[in-house]
Image 1: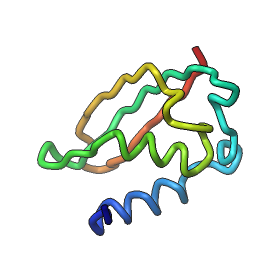
Image 2: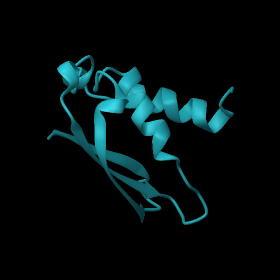
Image 3: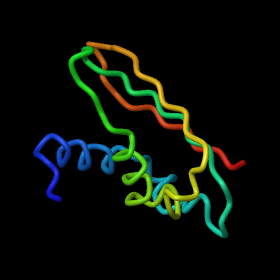
Image 4: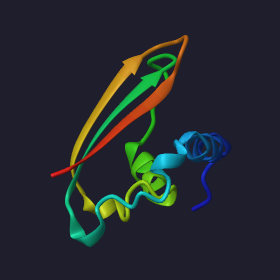
Length: 93
């Protein structure tokens, strides 16, 4: 399935903004279980983001070895019209 233009832009922006020290970190290697906390700050309540895309991008950018190792998920939605963003915390369990 080809993602729509907004999803492609989100993907590019996400990967570009992952700090260098977290790229290719490969958390979850050797089958280490992980916990993810994701807070999405939307510009309004009219939008939504499937956090599955965030998990895929964490893997694509090398932050996690494989998103299947994220076995605990905490997802939150907030509104920040002036500074929409996604904040992610990954922890080993």
